[in-house]
View (cartoon, rainbow, N blue to C red):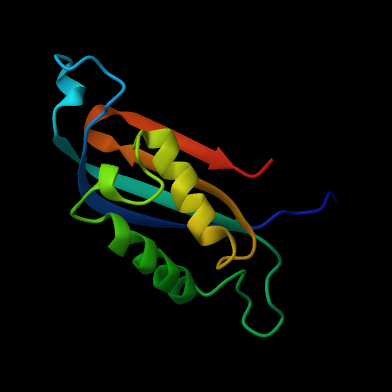
Length: 124
């Protein structure tokens, strides 16, 4: 039997506004607009002999709350490190902030469900 890999995921949401400065001033996305964002963080690891868990979901939620607080109901362009807040940039930003706090983090996905768009950052 081949080795099994165990992954767990936690979803989160936030609402925020942004605009793109790299677009022409007349482009609709250069104007301030907002989205309801959804995200998923995925961790991989072995089950703890004591708890049977890869990681306690409450611990994941606690770390996500810290990140969500920096994004929710904010103008993303004003968040340090998100000058150009594309989905790709947001996913990378979230990954960087959770990486040290969540050992086993393998990916962060950020979505705009109303637009059918998503960006995924995955550890190589």
